[in-house]
Figure: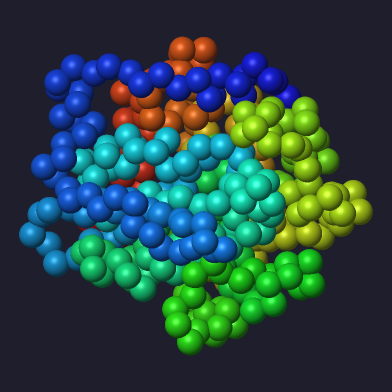
Length: 345
């Protein structure tokens, strides 16, 4: 938010070149079957899709990793995570679900941030109810995302039982998932803990929407509005602000919604950040990790030396001096190791 040039260059992604060996390591389509653009919900006629990568080895079922892309809740789609998905599908045995959700700029710049969270909730519920068709085991699910996507993953972990059929978020600060199975209410879904997951990987996440709102998330000084070609506005609409309605913003902030371990045991979580990240800084990620630990929750923290923001994005970024081929594999291998330990593979 604070550096226009820094954020701008995140959008200038140039697909890098690889030699044959790198291509085989990073993406070997013989290792998986891909189903693209699977529609999982259509809120107000707006189709939401995901891509599903299923291993082709002979095991009966596989754990599932659900990916949410970043982009300040305003830009990008799941294609920014294509190379990440391909690498994971090539180098591990997980069903990979690369998810699209609505952006604030969608539907004539009318989407609210609570609706984006509801999309993330709905995607996980849809996956749990349908992933067996793609060799996925719905009792072994992990969520991950980078930046805004890490925020959505953390909301699933921390607030996944805070569900209500009342679609007016302002009334009770609860969520109505975009997808629910026929005949199931949000309250039933909450009671059944349908958003329970077994692990989370949060990469350079945005964990404090309230603070971001105070610091200019909703202002034209936030260049993501410009790059999404949308007019800056409140993430809940023009009548709300973090100063006048702090509870709404804090309800969307994972850092304010961590349960005590005695109340709820959260799944193991791996938090990653680049040591040179100026957007979601190591300090902010460490603060979240420390708070999780203070509530008795199990976490691991990994700081990627000499790396900046968005090191998991497809392609390369000349300004940041990063490329997927050079920077992402080490982080993704760290993720695979974490997941293999959690799922005992």
